Length: 416
Image (cartoon, rainbow, N blue to C red; front, side):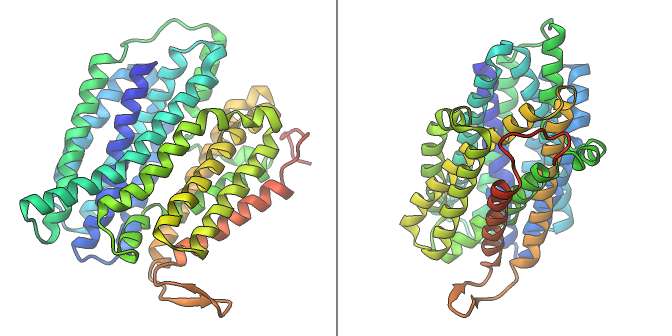
């Protein structure tokens, strides 16, 4: 179990750094239109979402360990190639290949967790996996920014060369991920009982992009799917532009931006296991409402009081809300749908999340061009800040869905 957690953390640091830390500032340093930041990252998200399910099936057939080794090896070359590419189309292709690699990696990681954890301990295993995943997210911006800043200072780099060292670091991290996966992950696949095979299939479909199943479930659980869609549309709106916008808005170096992310993420990550089980104590729907309410509250506080030090506290509030709500959404779906369609239902929620992130990320490339204005005549929105305003609105919509659309005692098959 600890082997796959280590590999997952290394992989998330690597992919997070190259796609959402290094690439956005690199595109800006190249002097390309800022809209390309969102367009390039959308190519990554689309490939990741579309190919998770096929690669999940491939992992069952050829072995999960092979994909967990091959995927980061591919990304070693895409990271190094990025340094030589200055055209947006080339950057789109490289990030699309990264999306394919990540699509090959995550279903196999989920599958190994299911293969090597006892049926009664899989929820605990997934919580530990979530902590590992969040640790990777937390470290990626801080590490990438620190590498760029240190290399610029000591090597006296100028121009676009100031934003290239993190790609070398990413290549090294991808190589380490592949070596660690090859050295410590178990090969083959253990013999499973039928119930365990079913559970593995359920995990493999989670987060997959299956439009057929999504259409079937749309009529049966529309409120849950819209909830997942709006949450991740909000995430997609800010995921690509947060770093270049905030480093410029606060006039801070990359490493300092990374610190603003790292401290809240580590604090929230340490609390994610106990907070993730809150739904079992107060009820899944109440936990979803509390979590989304906290996230929306923290986000709007950050917009109303955009001061650097306060963002640390607001970030913690947002993160706590996330780790309360997110596990409860999947638990709510699992407990209230037809048991025979549980995997399809979870997969449909994953599809809604993927669609939301893709659409939000695509819209961000348009909204980032809006100039400064005053909302309702008094609330100042800086140039480029429309993406954060739109994200805040989506979080409020998500919270409203959880209050008015989710029922504490009802079946999702179908919604009444």
